[in-house]
Image 1 (cartoon, helix red, strand yellow):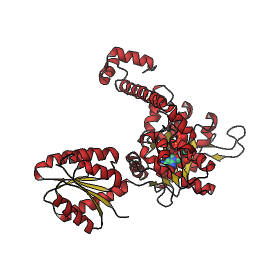
Image 2: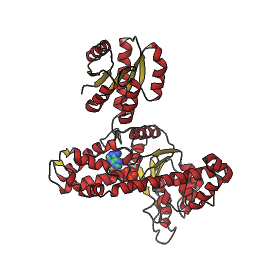
Image 3: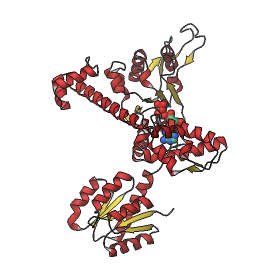
Image 4: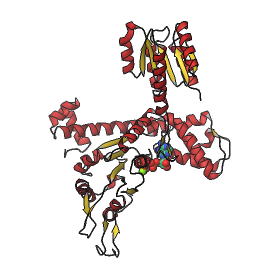
Length: 448
Ligand SMILES: Nc1ncnc2c1ncn2[C@@H]1O[C@H](COP(=O)(O)OP(=O)(O)OP(=O)(O)O)[C@@H](O)[C@H]1O
Ligand SMILES: [Mg+2]
């Protein structure tokens, strides 16, 4: 498809020169005389790139830049500037401009910058393949997801332990798989252990295996998941639910990189890449004595945070289309899409269960409805929520909960940093010692 470039300049001659040159290069060009007009075009035509002058009537280039950054920070903006305003251009770069060009400019220079910027734009606005070799995708083009993709790309090239955190249903397991299938361990096993699903006393033998006769019922020897994952990746899901006892064993194995099967004497060495995930706040678990601090540090080498769906609403449309097409195939249906109103209903919903919840909602709707386009009425459950205002309440509660959680973890951090010194911690937090004492009581952090 033809790439779309928005050229913004109050000087008609400049508009013409730039348009002619870019059209000759095979781009589609839209022009605007000022920032205000440009913003309208931007929303309507979704250009791939913006080239804008700085000084213009109505709305100048800097304001336009900040407006664009608010809606679509993935679209590169190139500033054109006269010699006198280079400083402004530098501050534009700090605000997210891709590059700037000084007038009078050289046509070749513009060509190069445009080409480079468009490459970046293309890379920054795509879904992410779990494995470069098949078609399984992580859907989401938002800047927050782009950050996640970059982290996955970086860590998949190393063997460092990765700690994935994120609310329930945000795609932690998908991320773990992407890390494995994009690494050079991809032809070796990817072994998953859900620490919450296996009873405490069985987890140890699941992880490390046992020899024949190690305990009653151990009639044959069995290798553990650590051995099965040799050469590949071991994914410990819901790591926060592991008992303290098993945490100690895990810590020892990670430290020494070797272990014995239960009831065994032979030392086993394995080469594994470890990925762990949790939806819990591990730091809080550490502060509450439910998670071993040394293990936490051992695991928290490279943290990757998956954003909740409500913080990347711009991805909802693509996710909805992705799930409609998936369930169309499975159910042999032919639903073509979703109405604007229905999409708005989905965008206004808080999605506490994140993508898993959205997936379930679309699955249910595709199974139940036989229509071409899904309408708001096909999502009765969500609609009621918005209409009764219960969604507002949830959001409010959520924001309050968020605040207390942030406050609590800030206090924990400050206390840990000051080795429990109340005066120093209060100072670091910018609150009085008395207030800190009250908060420590409120959050039961006396042991810190
Ligand atoms: N970005 C995405 N694109 C497509 N599908 C996704 C995406 N994120 C999550 N999913 C789907 O949503 C469901 C939940 O994802 P996943 O199991 O990875 O989440 P999780 O964070 O591990 O959740 P939990 O904490 O509940 O275990 C899966 O069916 C997964 O395929
Ligand atoms: Mg999971």
